[in-house]
Length: 73
Image (cartoon, rainbow, N blue to C red; front, side, top):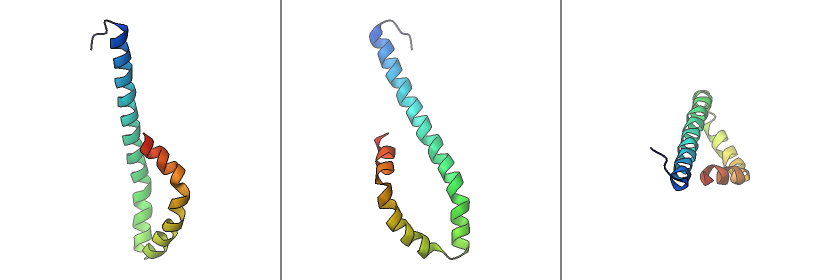
């Protein structure tokens, strides 16, 4: 993209920020999945699924601020 005016520069900056945010979100999701998958495999192998899900039902509502921030981006 050739930048010929201040408007072109502003558009380029916005596109760059959007692209960087998307890359960061994807990298975070991949990292989280890599951290969670082995744990979930261990949980499922020990038949603790019901306990974990019931605990999550009480824990997740307390994380509403974090969930809001994740969906904001």
